[in-house]
Amino acid sequence: MDNIKIIHRIKSLKFSGYLIFNILFAVIWYIYTHGNVIYFWDGGFPLNPIIFISRYINVWNYPMFPGGPNFGFQQYLPLAIISLPFYIFNIPIGIIQWIITQIFANISFYGIKHLYLLFKNNDEYSYIDKIFVITVSLFYLFNYYSLLWISEYLTPIIFYFVTPTLIYFYIKIITAEDKKSYLYYLLLTSII
Image (cartoon, rainbow, N blue to C red; front, side):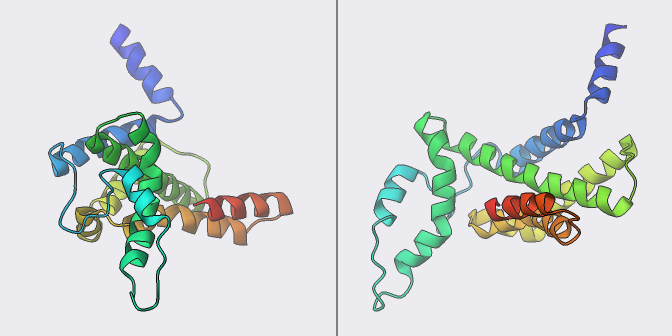
């Protein structure tokens, strides 16, 4: 009987969809990476963000040197800044990469879930809806296009991950009825 109570409590959790999604995403991520770091010949994930930031933060991009430091600065600096707090706490680089990917996957799941609820035009969110949204989110995150970007772990993968949430926020901005909610979603959009 205790197992039934535990299962009932998990089902009654408001964030059970996030829990199931995170477990499935972590399993698929582990199968895809085999627990290794994704870093190819021109990989975008900084292995040492402190060295990377110190090297690229003071780059003077002279016009006769078109784009070398600029490319590294624009492409890799966001990932270096995001991974810096984890690196300071001496977390292994493979775990850092997984945590960052998991965070962006959750942002994507949030957007897909709320877009679904927005277009469904109903406040009920049944278990069938949760399964549908989780499945759509996993197919959105693991397809040929996204795996191609993940294979080099460049900054455009971040934009791909946050696109559903940005679309949801844009719709909320357009349909905002009061100034407070308009400014709230505008602020959230600018943060992302």
